[in-house]
Amino acid sequence: MGPSQVYRVALFAFASLLFVTLGDMEVTAQTDSSEAVKNIVIVHGAWVDGSSWSKVIPLLQAKGFHVVAVQNPLTSFADDVAATRRAIALQDGPALLVGHSYAGVVITEAGNDPKVVGLVYVAAFAPNDGESINSVSKNYPPAPLGGELRPDAQGFLSVTPKGVAEDIAQDLPAKEQPVLTATQGQTSSTVFGAAVTTAAWKAKRSWSVIASNDRAIPPELEKAEAASIGATSITLPSGHLVMLTHPKEVADVIEQAAMKANSR
Image (cartoon, rainbow, N blue to C red):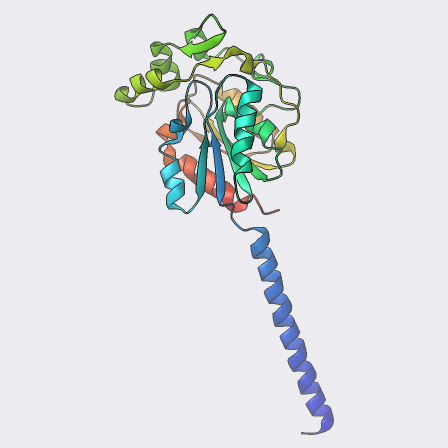
């Protein structure tokens, strides 16, 4: 083999090695940019607590996710956002923020935290800047649940047993409904007029679970807001507590969001 042949062979080998090395670097970069989010912070809505996620949490934990359920005090919108921000601060890396019902408003505000990389709305409100539950609901027929809310002297609202059985948990077993009535968290009426400052979904990827038989939030509102924020959405034949009636499907959406929230 002459000198020119040796040179050509060496040049080919070097080029091949460089190609393989760059290819490995590209694959590594792609893997790093789309690495699954391991931390999931779940936020409950009005008249319930963190146990409303009791059927979803074990499914996510079995997949290796670190899950934290915020216990909202339900005393004011600011208090609930603060509680959620404290939970986010304790995470050791990027987090996915999940909210049900009224907590959709909470995660829309708290989701501006730099640790939050994605938002999942589960039968939830998803308002824009300056919007509140009252303002986004005004163009829709009143939800049946509204007629079963009872205020106390301090302006905190409770749901009647009839409201729980017919408008919140109508598709859950009858034996579970009294427990939900007994454990409900009184909710300050002020949270429904509280407006979002900056909607996090404008800068973060979002997903939505729409409950087609919801009697607490108009399903048409859930659909319209999911479309408005550009959320990847699914619709389930469920009442308001979709995470209790369809835990696997809800957990699947959260898992998919965790896998894709970091990708662009």
